[in-house]
Image (cartoon, rainbow, N blue to C red; front, side):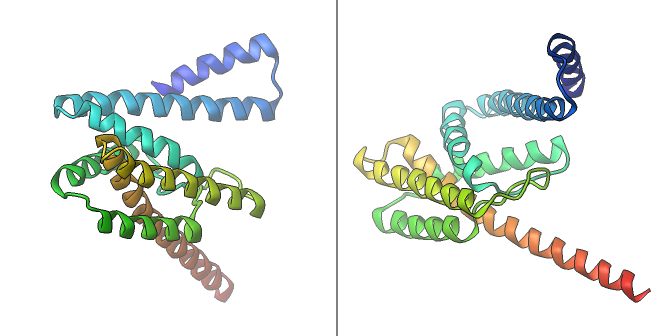
Length: 202
């Protein structure tokens, strides 16, 4: 369905503006990202509405939307895999926020863990995106630190407002996701090198 909409919009823009091939590919990529994200948001919102947690879902979604562009994370090849993982991620964020009380010492531990993770591992971009230059990577790390520092600080300044309680769990789980994402990259690189070595041996 999304590809059909993208194809129609692509034909429209091509007809109206006569885009070059490079601009056309960029437009198609942007349209696919926007439509995929919008459709996932709507579907997940409906699911969490049925679970009587639409506001908590929006809290978690907002925090992740602010943070993920600068940190990256796990990426899935299929739409189904992506939405299932996203649903599990948000459900776990909501469950932990409701099930485990967050005190000051726990928040400090989460902040230190998340900060060190962002500084050492972020960003982990999708394979379809170009490798960022060192200067841009540094900016992403700095933006990530500003975002997580703001949320942890505001959590106690606002006397643990529900949004900031959920955001801390989202940030912590996102940090864990970066560890998993880095492990996946290392595993894939090792497999790729092994296949090349085997190919040379043959």
